[in-house]
Image (tube, rainbow, N blue to C red; front, side, top):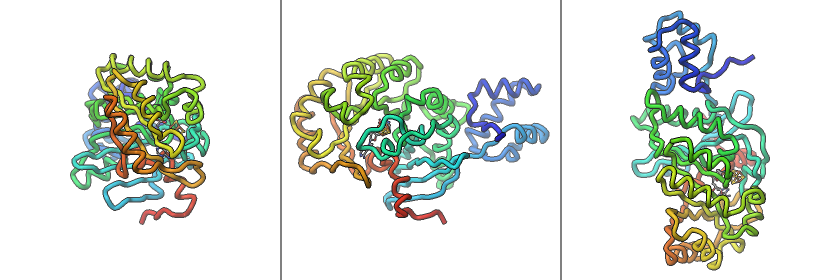
Length: 352
Ligand code: SAH
Ligand code: SF4
């Protein structure tokens, strides 16, 4: 049997384990600080621990993270990496350098069970959930890389492969571990979780007492159109999704953002914009318009740039805040599973 990964543990579990070994209470802080603060990949490096404790930790646990097997940069500071997991499955993570921000976009599942027809990840089907350690390790991977340049990860967006609220426990554990001030200490307000609209997950997240930002993928102003684009909409209609998002906003005081992928001739007309404005009017909301990012096999076209501008203007005219996420937008650069797709085409450079 493979050793458990220390990064899968919550702090209280680590503390309980070390207490069971007869270690003093402060050891948990030390080990946690090495793993999550110093980003150690090896127990031997934990030089303030007694040698026998280091050896015992190494026998009981591993700190090994996913291994990069391909990389792709855009020449402007955005870097995608394909990471190979313990069982040979692969996921993507992306670093976006923008002004002072260093944002990492992470995956929560291998594939996705939701199956949105415009999404490369959705088209590949669902393979498995990631563990908490596998989710957090994507951030640690880039944090190690940035450390070389004296930089830190400043923001995390959960917008890569998979639906985070369908892998709720592992996602929350990963975010709590990254947030823990004894280690990585990433502020919750610097984290955004994007969901396709899993209502019970949004309600649960509202009760966590964690001030992460919520992004809800809407993509359509009516249930009929949304059901074509988001298969889960059968289960949770727009009214329920918006009610859950309102609950999230009032519980956390955070403005919810709504994502809307623009697909030419499908959901990009002015009457769609007006319908969306009617839905959102009066809410503490912000719309992120994402022009469709094409990938092989996806049966949609990017919208006309004029239609994108007109759509945005129509929202603003109806008092709904909206931003177009162009080439540097997270969802576009992360491409939701598109790194894997490109590798299948042989188009990716291999790491040297
Ligand atoms: N499952 C979650 C988070 C991952 S997808 C969700 O759906 O919200 C992150 C964002 O990328 C979503 O808003 C999704 O709609 C968007 N996206 C997926 N495929 C895309 C594509 N081909 N072009 C543009 N945006 C896409
Ligand atoms: Fe899954 Fe999100 Fe892609 Fe839909 S858009 S298939 S929910 S990852």
